[in-house]
Image (cartoon, rainbow, N blue to C red; front, side, top):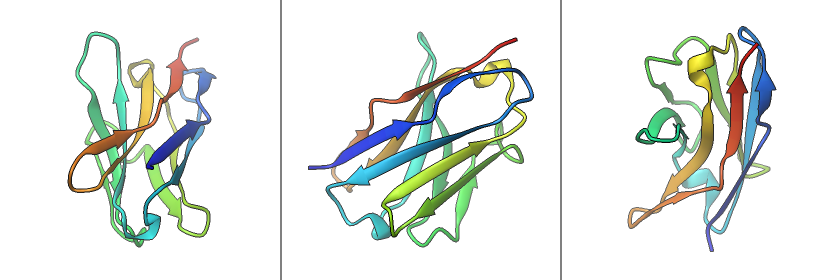
Length: 116
């Protein structure tokens, strides 16, 4: 079955950096568009970034463009999110996402807190 496991979150000061990782299993990873979403309690889950199966085509929400970088390693079935210049408004639960054309799958998430 599809499984997505995120890691790498934590507490960081404004302006700092973190790299999130997502380990995927249960599907053909190299064919899959992978995405990162984030969620704050009381708000809708929002799209952060996506990457094509080949890794050549990234896509970002305007709020993170220029600060975040999505990448993947198809030999390890992993997708990453490098986050630079973090702001307090980036505080959220970050979730890895895959859609098999029938339903979306999310991991359990990793918490990122940006605070001084």
